[in-house]
Length: 375
Image 1 (cartoon, rainbow, N blue to C red):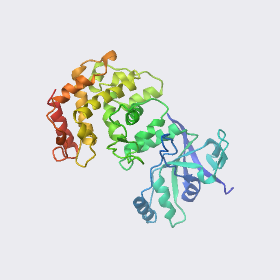
Image 2: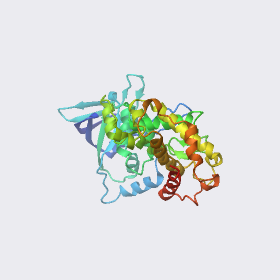
Image 3: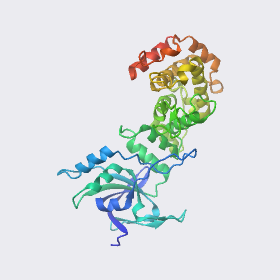
Image 4: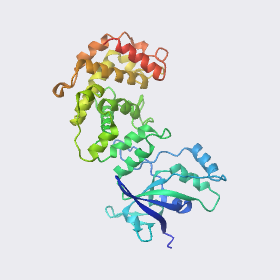
C-alpha cells in the first residue's frame, strides 16, 4: 500500500442527510490524515474557516492518561469530512481509500495530513497522540464531499445538547445552514441588532460566547439572545426546519400565535419586522433606564442575562395585551405605547442590582413578576 494512502474497511450508510461511511481505522492512520479546523472571526468579514472548538489542555491531559489505561475505550464514532477528490470507495471489497488530491474548483492541492477535517472527536484524537501502545482501532463516520453548510449542521446536531460545547458557537454555525430555520432566523436577528446603528444592542452581543477582540461592554451571549427569541417564532423548531428543508410551506393558527406571537411574521419571512419590534421595545427600555442600560458596572443586571430574559418574558405578555390577535399589517407596537407600560414599572436606575434580583432563575423570575404587575 502506498504510504500516501489509507484504506479503511467501511460500509455505506444511507440516511436523510445523504450517504456516508462507517469504518474502522487505526489511531495512527487517523492521526496521519486528520486535522482540526478552527473557527475564527476575521475583521468585519465574519469569514468561516472551520468548526472545531478550542482544545482544552486539562481535558487533553485527562484523555492522555485514560488512553493508556488497561480498559481504555472510545466506543462512539469520530466524525470527519473528506473532500470528494480524496476518496474512492470499492463496493465489492467494501473498502474506502483516502489519499491526497487536488480540489477541482480551486486547483489547490490537499495535503495528505489534511484529508480529513474533524467535525467531532478532536480531543479524543489529540489525546491519542500520547498513546503508548501499538493497537487502538477507532470507529469513524466519514462524510465525503459535505459542504460547509452540512458540516456546520452535523456539528450542531452532534453537539447542541452537550454542555461541554459553547452553545453560542453552535448557534453561530447555523448561519451556514442551506435552508431557512428558526435557529438561523434568531441568529440573523441577533447579528443584525448587534450591528445596526439604531439598535440598543450595538456591540453588546458576544458572537461566539466569548469577548470579541477589540470590544468592551459585551454583556449578552448570542446563545442567550437566540434562546430567548426562539419561543417567539417556533413551537417545534425541528419540525419547522425539516419542513423548510423539504420545500414545504409553514402555517400558523390562533393557538400558535398565543404561544409564539412572532410566528406569523416569521412564517411570512418578515424577520426584519421581528428585529424592528425588538429595537422599539428595548429602545424604550434603554430610554426609560438609560444609566442602568448603559452601565457595565458589576452587579448591574439590566443589560445582562437576568435582565434581558426577564424583559423578554415581559415582552410576550405586553405584546399579546396590545395585539390579542395577529395583525400582519399592524405588527409593530410604537415605542411611545411601550413607554407607557414601562413608565408604570416601580423601579429606579439603582434598583437593577444583583442584591435585589440575585443571579439565576430566581432573580429573573422576581424581576419578571415586578414588570408583570403593570399589565
